[in-house]
Image 1: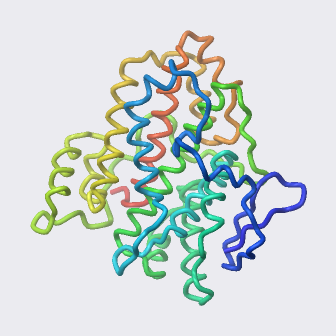
Image 2: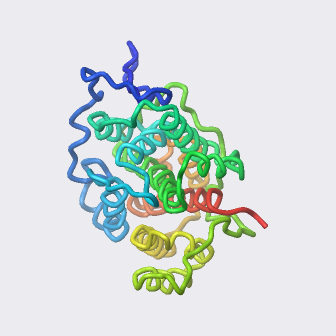
Length: 333
């Protein structure tokens, strides 16, 4: 895979058709790889904003470490390398157009060795990249064919669940970072050619009449951790149908569920009646690259405290994550 800097452009173009990566090619912002906060990417936020969010930021940060460890052992059932994971994350970040996130994942990806030059490896990486871009930006095009193509290039059930969690999570991260940047009045440097069309609901997790297309964990073979996660999350309405499938990776499910519980509790305590809220949610959902203070400030002007506005916008971002998991891992009955 080659990452090329185009003259006159302030961003990386993520090329998926080759694994050639010259030694002299460097990430656009090398220091973006080194952050203390892997979720918010060291945004300088006031304590009065961050402190109320710690209950969901803590599991979100933990997911960054779980999804993107520096070294990933691979085997027959878990074939996604660190390169595969970060390449997918960069694809999603580019689709969302949040430059800060693109810089981070590009900087992490650049020094890693890519796959070998075989036709099979190139096809596998190209298929993963295409799928990630489609689910991130146009999830309505994901169908049985898209799932079969992942299977045809050798992804296991564990791989498919993981890749969909990565896509959903990085889309969530992009929208949260965009919301926090808007609070600070920072512009989001959006990437030319990566505008997102309207594609997902903005209020609530609304994919209904859903059933999984992947088998859930079999109870007779389940580990103690899987059984505990099943018991913990199947009672949560938003996760009820997803839990048996996501429980193949129970640690990821636990952190996802903890974010959900914290956000749901926080949103219920906040007034969401502001006239400007639907407009802000819609733009953040469809075009995080264009979300700015022009959408955030009216929320505060309508009487929503800044911390409460972050909760409401983050809840919308999380619903987009769950919607993508349902689109990718099941079908409407």
